[in-house]
Image 1: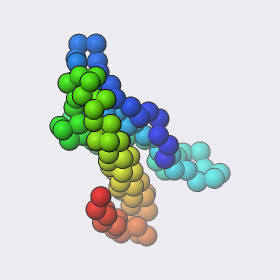
Image 2: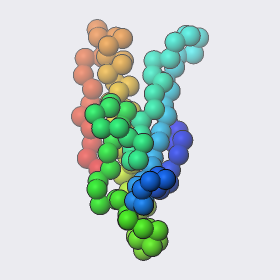
Image 3: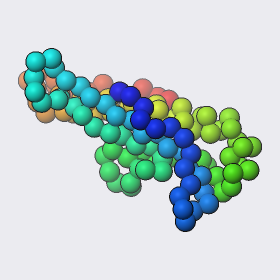
Image 4: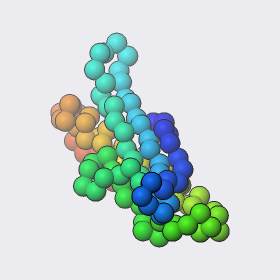
Length: 116
């Protein structure tokens, strides 16, 4: 897993700053052409509701102005930490499901996700 982007984003037509944590993971077996897993998981502004690769942040992490951003730095750091944790868990779940689908005789269940 690697982190592709971390930051706050405010679009051209929006004044709200929202966290962005975009991650990418790849699982491969040496000597095989096809990857077992090669996916992106996004938290925050790039996350589209209802998509398996998307995680919506808590609404409290939307900041209406740059001033609000600057006065909530500790909270923003927490949102990035939550995003990294959430994307890692989602990726682990997806990898387990792919392995289970590819090897149902040996992978019968995925471990329960630990709490935050």
